[in-house]
Image 1 (cartoon, rainbow, N blue to C red):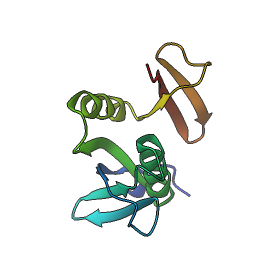
Image 2 (tube, rainbow, N blue to C red):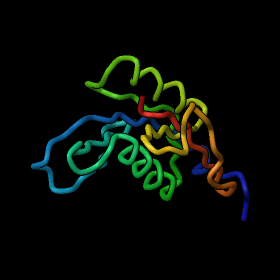
Image 3 (cartoon, rainbow, N blue to C red):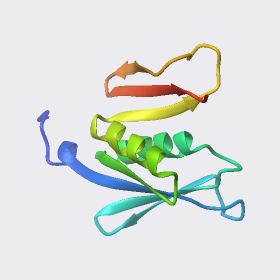
Image 4 (cartoon, helix red, strand yellow):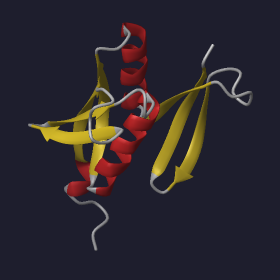
Length: 121
């Protein structure tokens, strides 16, 4: 079985939008042309959770998220997610006592997965 296949290099952008509590699931993912759109209900799922879930689902289909574009979010947060996604990092904003300053942690090697943890305040 060849290690390098066309599917391993298929990339797509992920656009993330806030939905509402009326949607069927906490996070929904759909294809729209050459990109994917994730809609999440903020009352039921965090932004970070919606992005990670979309990445995992797409990865299971052989698709790598090349950039995350937040729609309708704070411009600084949008810029942060976009920059992190270029490095294939997930972003998690956390209020726990273990994260007191921004840090990148590698969560797994195969497939490579790392998260940029940011303290909430």
